[in-house]
Image (tube, rainbow, N blue to C red; front, side, top):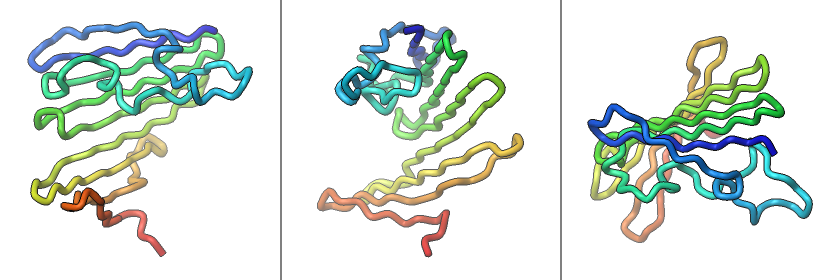
Length: 157
């Protein structure tokens, strides 16, 4: 296997990136592999966000970055997250590179209010170097632990 995996992070008011190298077995969820299946750059990670791999208080972190490079297939994946509002709000930028093809996705999550907590989530993709919205929703956390979603885009038919 020719995978190199790095999780980089920056603390608030720190100019330097800190780098953590991980093995594929540490990063990916190996319990989801079929018998005989090998890990690849697009296997399913153990966690959804880089911050979950780090033993650091999220409110102290300004940025994380996951870098996965497959030197055999010449594919790479970079996911950069910028946090604010004590780590509650974030923007994620994902770039997939494969030979001459690049895929770009951006996701924002913003906490709009508390009691009840309401989140705004938006997802964008790049098409001919122009951002296009793919998804826009508001999620309300109800007192009983359930959530109510109001989808703005795309409109449901």
